[in-house]
Length: 91
Picture (cartoon, helix red, strand yellow):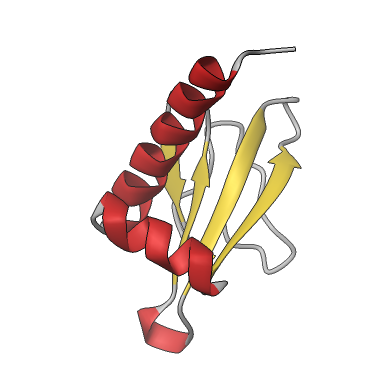
């Protein structure tokens, strides 16, 4: 089991990556998570790489990104292995 400080660093890194992926300040990302206005889903692409799918907003204002360990892929930009979501859009 990891200690609390290590988990804090991992959560802090995730918030920073989500902020970068969604082009929002980290404080805003934290607020959106608290409000339930930001959806996070765990996933694995066809190459077996794990990611967090982050979704915020609706319609033209919707922001969607796959956050991998070392990279971020935005909605409409296919992941490196070329897999796509159910809509056929790279996610």
